Image (cartoon, rainbow, N blue to C red; front, side, top):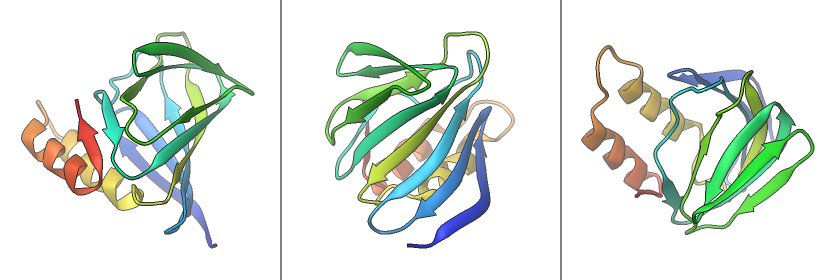
Length: 139
């Protein structure tokens, strides 16, 4: 497995620093500034997600249950579970995210960044098409 160095994708205020992008797993640091706009609730069709808290506090809602992930905390989000993340706290939150298998990789996040990082409102139909193509199911 090859490590990725200095591989950052920004989606709005969110920052993803990719560490591993392989068929077996996608691993990245996910930084969410306080009260930043975050992805809409969704599920993963073919992949599980694991989050490990590095700093700050990230609110993670999984199938309607709220979890606060702080440094040293972890949560497993199985494929098919509806989830989303938000930072309702002061200061940035950072987690280590692992998606297995690596079917949702860097390319997905780059494509979403192209739709979101525009003046005005993003094209939600285009964002949904990208999500579905990469195995994410918007709710």
